Length: 111
Image 1 (cartoon, rainbow, N blue to C red):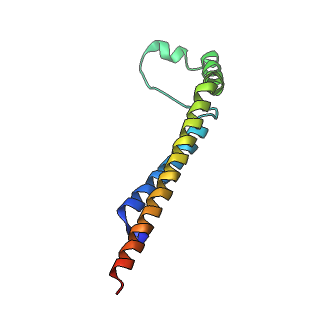
Image 2: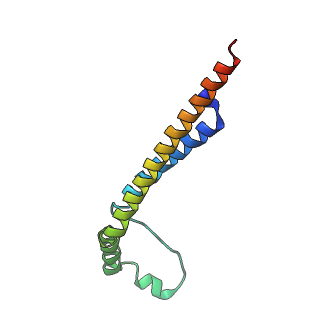
Image 3: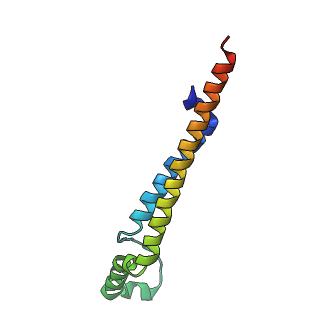
């Protein structure tokens, strides 16, 4: 009966969402590789098809960016973990309050 209460379902959803945000913050610490492309009909673009220096620069920037932003990203992980702990606390508080309400209602309805 308690698992159908909207307040418990909402608290559980907030807990799951906070967990996903922690995973996303941790994933942001990892290096990223991105591919991009464009099409055009300019004559200069044909000369730059084999622009190895630009490709290497972009590759190094993508791999090293989490290192340079490490402090900010690590803080984001800590903040997300704190939010998850708060969501877990809220879930426990909501569940206990629901148990008290149900038990109090059952005691009042017994003869």
